[in-house]
Image (cartoon, rainbow, N blue to C red; front, side, top):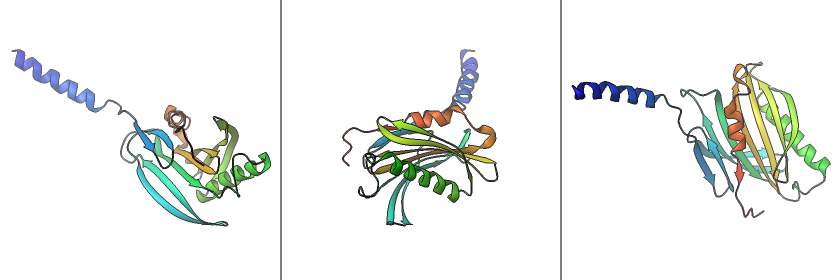
Length: 185
């Protein structure tokens, strides 16, 4: 009789555990000098992008949710090093403001979207911006946090359907970003 009760109980436990939310994965990038939480393991890539100042190397970590249940469709972090004669977090506010404006407008243009809002934010003492971009003819929302740390730009992004905007996972992702000590540049 005990065996008969054990099997249904085991089955119930297995079923409930299979629907439990997964723990987020901590990703550490030694080269990027940061750590961040993703809902699942992201893919890592490198892209070369032609810009007005020449080819820029972008380091990308991206997690596309796909078939897994999540309020968001994509999570990502991108970073690039700029020539420190071009941009640096110690430069005058006007130059830094133009850097962020160009970054946000460029991202919106790439998505064929519209900037809905932008506000100044900081990480430690480094300047940044939080921007919200509407894309896919209003069906999608992309939250961007951009930071300038010395001559390195970091872009954190979370995209979702407009009806799922402002979900807690957006803040969880952004708030998990940590710069590692000993930043060299």
